[in-house]
Length: 260
View 1 (cartoon, rainbow, N blue to C red):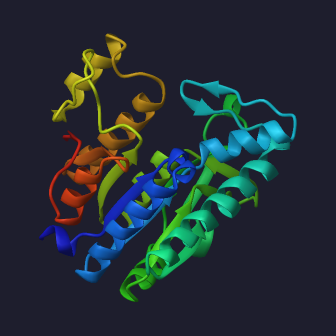
View 2: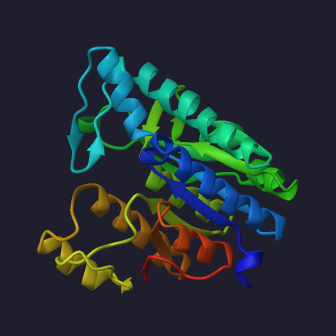
């Protein structure tokens, strides 16, 4: 199977939405890929917007092991920032770049099963793949799904899902190739140099040394989970880096390869 036959699942963080140029560049890259017949799914978080909205509402952000704690009273604000504002900002950037997109969340069309991940984290969801027919239909039309990481449990409870984990599950659903894009060009060593590839034991060593920590630890662990499950590398790269995006559009490997 060539890369072209594989759906490319791009996960972007909230910092992207703070950067007009970054969004324009990423959507231009997506437009090029779609024009070449490459199917693309965009999964997003929106941490910055969530923090802004919480602050505006006099609420604090609490994290536990790099994951956002979501008390019930914060859920309406978090859902609005992610499934609402973040999703539409990205759709607007897509339309501006000539990309036809479908804005959606993890709650759509039986995509996933969602349960509470850990009582200590509040309304944070853990999702598993359920039914890919809707997202595959959207892709078959040449549209780009833009998916927020808000899910709903079988009890009808809104849940906030870590966007890296959401991207992992969507990659499994569409048998896709996962690229985690953030504002850093990949996993950096203690001297700030890009590490070309990592496997489980190398990751464990770097975590012990404190080189991989917090948000990057969550990202790398999500990448490793997919790499091992799907038996193929997952890329951790940057939307800030024009050269990386150009290489990505050409189907080349970019950033740090997380290997099974």
